[in-house]
Image (cartoon, rainbow over all chains, first blue to last red; front, side):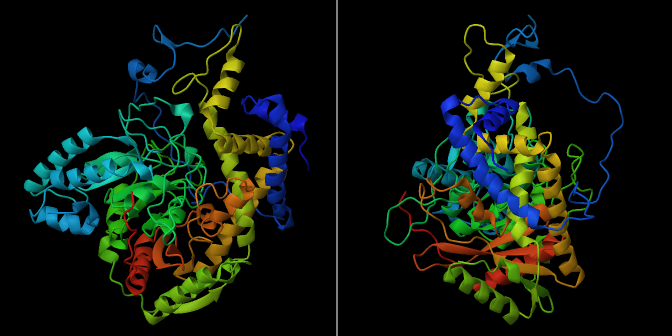
Length: 95
Length: 495
């Protein structure tokens, strides 16, 4: 599998990271080097092996479905780059 | 009393309890050292006022007779831990200005035990790196140098600031985190002890997430005893982390008897890498002899899937990172890019993340995005998770055959120069973790113990890998190794 500049651009788009056009060939090359390294995994016989989900065999714990937190609007918003009237503010989303 | 900053935690505990010194004096001594150690780039956010306040509270507590082991001990905290009201940026520009409204469970546990925070420590951005060169704060520098050369060396990474600070006696101990070797590799590069406990021992709550199925916090200290003391204070069940183990925390220090007679130590043949420096080979053989002389049974073992650990890691860790780092979108905290007229929300995400993430983080997020994308999920991600299951089984098999611990080198080399790997392929840098990454994939405890110097005078470490949840036993093996190796060298002060 080799990654061309179109695929690199698509991955950047999916990851929501702006990559300038002229940086794409180098990025694609880096992806190819890393993926080339990863390709070694194809040598392993994984027939019948279950993909590992968690390190320790355990059921994720469940908590009681009750309100146990809240009323922290000020704290929640305290680090926002742009907070107005108790909300996070972002550029217009709907035309 | 001079040079209090050079005490171990155990020594300081004795002097504090005996009324010989106060935590305020000890803390002042560390703060003075930190002020004079800017050249190491270890401390990136200083909290002297908080430290003195905590020290005074600790002194009052010690006076009242209620003093846990960590009471009054000044520590550095890796920047990956969220600390209330104190900048916590994971060494990333995307978290510029972020001051958490809450405290991570591990740092809270340490504070509850009376520990003092001197400040936040440098690291690789989002813990992605093996040389502390990806930090937004600039490099952390190793206090060790090659002979008489003045070239700056890496303290390793990602917990590079923690390693540098402890080795240079700026603090008595430091927190680290380890996703693929980020406690053990830097500990080896600076000649200190670092343990990554079993996955689930330390709560991950409030630690900025890199790869959630691999991340674990642990202590970085001047001795194995200190590691036992500090680890005990850090761990424990936490309902806020659903993967935190509901197991009692043993008295690790009480298990340090130094007696390892009859213990079976495995030497994995797959860790004998081609092109491994002779010095590392010799160190490993010497360490084996030391454990044999201490009465352990040495056994050659095989961990057949070792070779595939790094490639599996470089699928799983970026995949989890791409998901975890999706939250940095310029909306809720940290950096937001300046937008042009007409830019919408997508431009805000893309520009913010391009400006805020450094090149290595961008690379890993994109690799993770790729291996998780439609059409490649099975070929890459699921295959890597299957290989991970096989790697874990390798360890289970040898433990089932009676092996108590496994001895390996900690790193494939001693500390390299900052900038020396700048032109190397990213994969070359990844090879630093070749001996440590298997342990994260299998969720096991692993400890790095300083064991010798190379011919240029740089420290080298050995790694011991233990059975899950048996950190006490593992620390005891490390204690025996530490005693036999007798590593006492310290870097000569140039900073």
